[in-house]
Structures are given as C-alpha cells and as structure tokens.
Image (cartoon, rainbow, N blue to C red; front, side):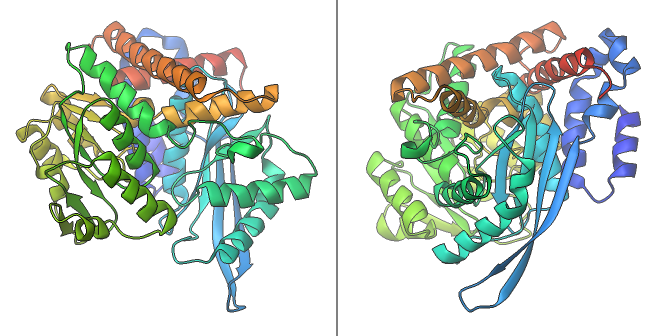
Length: 449
C-alpha cells in the first residue's frame, strides 16, 4: 500500500498521527482490494483519506482579567456516506489538524461498525479548560459556537464531547447554539438528562470496552471474574471501565493522569472509585491524591522522555489503555506480554503504536482496537440522536441492553471479517475491513461525490 501512503505523506506533510491511522487501515485492507478490483478502479482509498470538508477558524474570547485571548479551532467533516457527520469535540493544547484528521478518519470506521446511520467527523480547539473559571469556559464555548453553528445540525453534523469537553462544556455549547438558531434540536450529544440527554451516555465508552473484552475472553471460554486489570487514565473512560470491571468481578490496580499513576495492590474498590470521581469530576484534582488518601497505594511520577511507561510493568491478565494516543509502545507491549497480559482492549483512541500492536498480535494477545472496543460511546450518542428524533427517552436498562447488543454485534462483525480474509482472531484486521467495506460500498452506491 505504498502508493496511497506516498500520496498522503506528500499531500499532508507533518501530520504523523494521520499518517499512522491511514497506514494501519491500508495494511489491513490490502486483501479486500485484491478481492474487489472495482474498489481500486473507483479510487475509493484515494477518496476516503480526503476529508469532505475542513473548517478552521479563530476563537477570540475575554478572560476574567479582561484580556483578549485567541485560540484556533477546527471541524473535520470526514465522511458522510452512512449518515450525518458524528464525532467529538476536543479542547486540549495538543489539538492540531493532524490529530483531528486521525480521529475523524478512525471515527468514520468506528461509526460504521455500530450499524447506526452515522458518518465520521471530529473537531476541537487548542483551548485548555484546566485552570479556567466557569465564566471563562462559558465565554470561550460561546465564541466557539458563534462560528461552528453555521456548519452543524441534527441532519448535517452532530458533535459530542471528548477530552476537555464534558457536561459543562456541552451545556454552554448547546445553549448558545439554541440562542443563535432559535430552535431546540438534537444537534449535540452528551446533553444533560433533563434537556435531551440519554441515560448511560457518560458511562458508555467505558462500559462498552468491558463488554467487548468480555466477548473476546468468551472465545477462549474465560470471563473477567478474578482477573487483575491495568487501567490507564482517570477521566470518564477510565472511571466507567473501572466501574464495569468491578461489576464483572475483576480487580483494578492502576489509574493515572498526565503527571503519574497510582498502583494499588489491594485493588480499586467502589468506595475508592467514588473518591476518584469526586477528585477528577468535581475538584479537578490530580491522581496523586489517591495515594495520599489510601496508604496501601503507591504513586509514581512520570517524566517526559521516558522510553516506556512503568504503569504497564505489573503482573496482570488484562490491560485497558484509556488515557491518550500512543501511550503503549513496543517496549510497553513486551512488558505486558512478559507480565502475563492476555487481553488488551483500547478505551482511548489509537493508544498503541503500530510496533506495539505487532507485539500483541505476534504473541497471541486478544487485542481489541479502539475503533471497535471503544465504539460504545458513539453508539449511545447515536441512541441519543434516535431518542431526540422520537422526542422520548429510554430507561437505563433499555439503553444498557442496546449497548450490550451493539458491542456483541461489533465483536462478531470483526471476528467474521477477520476469518473471511484469512486472519482469524485478528480483531485489528477485522475491524478495519468490516468498517472499510461498509463505508466504501455506500460511497460507490452514491456516485463520485
């Protein structure tokens, strides 16, 4: 697949995250292109790597000192072959065009796997909500939406939250959209329960990752009960991954943030998890406070430039990387294999480097790639869109049951596609192939657009 990579790297120099995402998919789908020459003839690969639209704009806002600040913002509308663009907004200093294009590209296939009618998109800004007052965040969100509202809508593009965009930010964004458009529609997902949100939406990504891991283990007649698990991150995904793992009888011994991680040999209990939720969601504190509160836990600070992350050095059965992209490299993967890990389910987006993935696949690890394993979040976003369209809300059990069925179906779809194309139990190939085929078949049906 060197031809398409030559095109992408020439057209988009300096976009390593996007190059990585395209390369990963391109390697998996080679047998599909060989089996279906009409795909090559129609240049579907050349078309699918180009976003349908990229919107870039400035966001001026006034801080609490009365000083004008200016941030840069984007919306990548990647592919609408299957439905309105759907994907999160990320507010973080690291946001740039490469990261958002990689996320939008991944989102396109992830959304296809859910079987819900959603295209792929992603957006955000280099604004950092950390350390900002509620009023500063509100002023930023309103300025951000003053431009974004022109490009989104319930039948066009439906953003959601992501890193740095939680319930507070979604509320401010939705309120200003409603004021500007003078209409109450399901234009954003992750809304508050009393104004159009869905039950299980905050929990969905973490719950879905665990449901997917359980399905992978079931292929070997095993369950999560009694398994020791390593979880990175301490935000939304990590919290609800931990919560669902506890329900399944697993033991969670690590959590982290950007400064370091905690190792708790006794395990994170429900009571300790409630402390983490309060610490991160209410007080917006740092994970080291966990070790200060619970004497049996150890806190390890991380330094930039380390060749590996020692969080992955502990004996365990399962790993759930839930922090950020490329947090597991080849050395980390080797350490995980050496320490007995048999299952890796990605809660974050693309948290394992390509050479790390090779280590897992070469050692028979059940590896659930993010576009499949963490699709629970966007699945329930899709269910929120459905509820908004129907002007009703489903109860918790109904949403959770639908989520479980979606994750079970995604697992089967990946397994079947991997088997069909000669790489049984390779969930990476299965996810890429199944998502790709669904999107490109729709593109071919709709002509050259």
